[in-house]
Image (tube, rainbow, N blue to C red; front, side, top):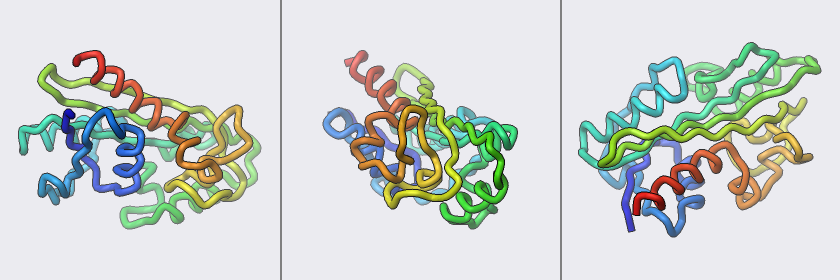
Length: 193
């Protein structure tokens, strides 16, 4: 089975990706390759940040790898938090801090449309490849559900009555932004075999 390093320190993302890719690729963590670097995310786009992380691992360790960046873009906030989603409430903030800031910033605004996006950049022997997944939805007025992480308790995808956090892991992984991007990654990996 092919081995790929997933360039993330986010254990929630690592677990989710391993669950989605189970059986197709062995996903190594940064800890598995003894990488404890704090890789800066200084780009202005999701694609740029994913590329920075993937290139860091490939250049330093010479291993095929992939990295992702995820952002939540809310229409009424002019696309915020966007590329700053992970640190929306400040550099040392928690998931709850970010979610609470989002709800405060939106207030009682009735226009709550949003897009959750993941971009995955893979570096392999054929070069650099980009895979994107987008899910449209809306921001609820209060957190709902106990599953998932990040903005999951306040993001309700179009066509659903549940937030990501109210879904089971299987339900979310069947349709989430990360699942869509990961499916494109898997299709590419299967195609080159």
